[in-house]
Image (tube, rainbow, N blue to C red; front, side, top):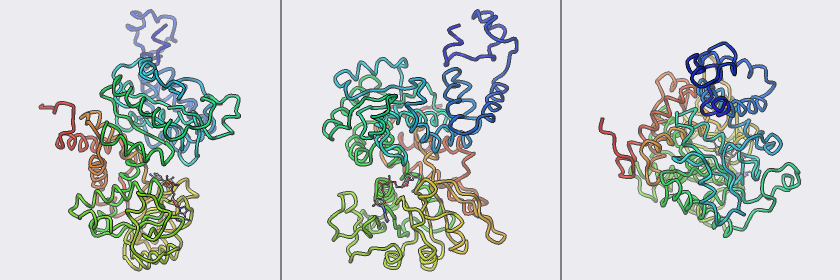
Length: 517
Ligand code: NAI
């Protein structure tokens, strides 16, 4: 009976007659002996009957509790179908209701009140060889703000994609919610809220908590990579800076997003036959996504032989106050790097006229900010502009695929943060790309799993981005595809992983022994 109750060992109706006899399962299962494919079919039938994706999410979570192998077989059978169910956008809804739909642990909750004993708590996890911890404070869940302990849906979902998209063994993955309270009073007022009931700590207290956690992980799971996910933007940037050169860790919101955007740029260059080092890039939005993209693009441009000053000069940024210029007093240290030495310019169109960018990247959360005039100006100046409207959800996208293609007379090379349908102009078909982070982080993680690098420098993400950007076939390029089809994700991840691991070995970062056969 224990076999049937253990989700890691349970095969349900797929236990063979011999196994049923040996394990004393006779009588505990119906007569039929099935293979996993018919079990998958039954799950698919169940999913069809569910009224919406949240119900499908709940059903799949229940399946994970019963039969882990079947759960991952279903997920891996069609990642593009299941990513929107187990991750964005459904996971956002699941997180909003997480306290109300809570059924199982699935990962670990470590609270700020646990300081002083985090190491002992980590040892309570049953697996002894954990290779990845995905950790969130629930500080900024997708576009939904502070969701406190409800944010656990994110590390759970993100790690499931490691397996679904890249085949990383699930027993090596540990989702953790570092619960340090929430400033979301609606949650604190909910009698069913599952988290610690207090407001979030000041920076010093948070950082001390995180330091103890990081030290404990190094001690208990020395081969583990820490994946930071959905922390409040300022915390995310500060902590990544602090740990990136010291331990094996990464932040997908910052490095993964930037890597995918860079892959999009490289993909676009493949279509226009331009050179990355010759582009002038205008980033509309100078928050954590924008700064991450700027920094990684700078690193990629330096790789292409530009000096630091030349690389930085190729990138300009606009925020709610207009173009980032040296004279502005409201810029952070990270933003000042990209500030231009010119008079203030408030609006986007005038900025385009002034700087003549060849690529425009939107990470502003301002829906419809790329107007007809903006797209026209980009097209007139450049011929074939890169237009990336990356803000999400859909009503935040700076423009739609149809708008980008129609207003540029089919000249724009377009990608978005959300999926858009194909667009037909005359007899030409355009397939818009989606800059989905799942293109990179599962493959990068598989590469980390294989090579076990001491740290995860930006160079590994740039290598991953280059790999992704180089996978387009001639037909895909003709259709304006900036990214390869999502259905090929397993193959994409494997290729990304291979190049990431190879580079980790070449740079002398790998702790793993290089395979000789
Ligand atoms: P954030 O809030 O840190 O930054 C937003 C930036 O936009 C700020 O610099 C703000 O000043 C600027 N902004 C706001 N209003 C503006 C206006 N009227 N004109 C010009 N700039 C304006 O947000 P974060 O985390 O940087 O994310 C931005 C967007 O990017 C979000 O919609 C997010 O969903 C999207 N995103 C997309 C990703 C993808 O496609 N893979 C990955 C990460 C983020």
